[in-house]
Amino acid sequence: QAAEKGGYAHFMLKEIHEQPRALRDTLGGRLQPDGRVKLEGVNMTPETAAYIEKIAVIACGTAHYAGMVGKYLMEKLLRLPVEDDIASEFRYRDPIINEKTLGLVISQSGETADTLAGLRAAKKAGAQILAITNVVGSSVAREADHVIYTWAGPEIAVASTKAYLTQVLAEYLFTLYLAEIRGGAPWAADLGRQLRLVPDNVAEVLKAEGQIRELASRVAKHEHVFFIGRGMDYAVSLEGALKLKEISYIHAEAYAAGELKHGTIALIEKGTPVIALATQVELLEKIISNIKEVKARGAWVLALTQEGNTAIEKEVDQVLYLPVVPSLLAPMVTVVPLQLLAYYAAVARGCDVDKPRNLAKSVTVE
Ligand code: G6P
Image (tube, rainbow, N blue to C red; front, top):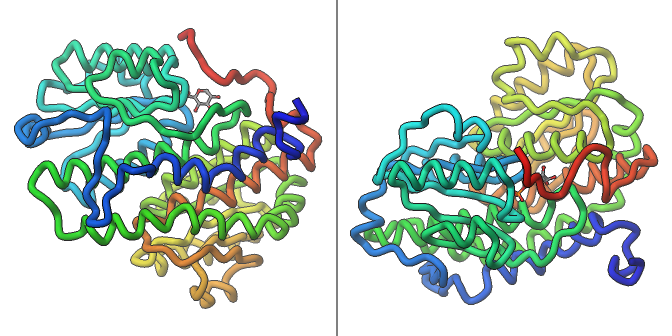
């Protein structure tokens, strides 16, 4: 097993470090220099693509949070409504799905019972199904009409890292694909160019590991941690909180920063750690005002923001600077330090990182 871990203390840490490679493999030969995308398992025609009026994300756990990033992305760029659903809710709530719906089923294993049931329900209602999965020939892959494989490679740690990141990347690729087949988009070439840089951006952010480890040792001493963010940062903060609670057993909750006043702020006491994601340029002022609100109640605030946003320093206790990427691509960079933060907090607390209590890698029963 030590050999399989490639010198890393845990599979999770190895998998976090494999992410630049996993992203490069998932991009593979799919992205052309002009922003066009070839997706070998997706065979929509201009007619079937034009027919899509709504996208319904169906997924569980981390895959669901990847889908939430996709909702912000696809609604913004494709101007198509995207509902993101937890598969166990979707399957029983009689959702409004028909042949004009694209069911976007996201699953690392391709075997999650609720996700598979959701896929079947959507298919039965007439939806065409696109699966994003990491396992070739999995149930989800077999039952979907279209498949995008994430080339993350086997993921051993229960807490998902490289699978999440490649799922998110696959959503960007699909966004480019759908835009093109529906007649092209002015932003496509630009987005394509930026996507190509993401593996290097992720490699860059991994260099902050030492600083993140120190920050984690501070977080590890607490029993309650809050994450706040707006827009895409909110979607990423949900994943950050999930990672932390899964492996360190710290109670971690993510809130849309604008919702703080509607309840969560009551939980902020002197020293409560709040991790504020501040990567969305157009929302920066708004998140800073939320940061001020929690600071005023005594919170210890760690902000994640892009290099250059130095104005935030005077508002927070610690800043972790991220490589400069457009707001729209920030989730793929921002999630990486949150994975490391969860990892090092769990290690500091002596937890079984790769096999957290009560959790399974793949939930194949309801
Ligand atoms: C379990 C795993 C998670 C995963 C979720 C969905 O809870 O521990 O890491 O996100 O199942 O799994 P899937 O294979 O469908 O992505």
